[in-house]
Length: 134
Figure 1 (cartoon, one colour):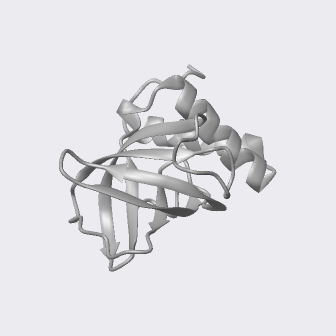
Figure 2: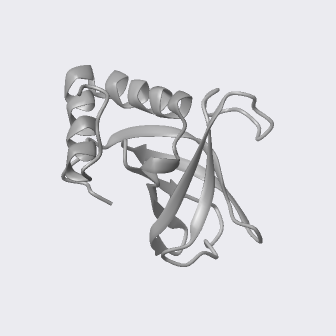
Figure 3: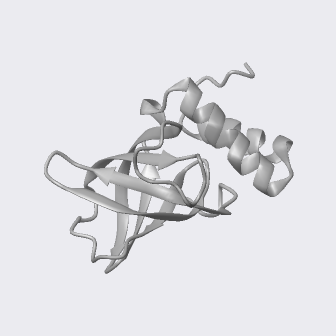
């Protein structure tokens, strides 16, 4: 994950990472506009470079997995360590609503909305993509 380019914030909530054959339930420990660190009570049976659909529940820590408010993000597993995994979002596959919620979560937890927006625009510029500010 590009830790130096994106502010990572502590954010504790439940999540599920799914592939076509596996589902891993756990908790998000921190997140950025680029990815998350997720912990699971069980060993994570995924490999690096595996594509996952990550569902992050926004109703709070003490919810069940039937919560209705969630972010749905495509991601790639970039690190697995027994009961932890780091995933990087596939930015080109994030829908506008999920990106907006993610941006607000990071901005709220840092208290610096301007810096979070700048990080996102800088990321797009590095990739050679046109940002909304253009």
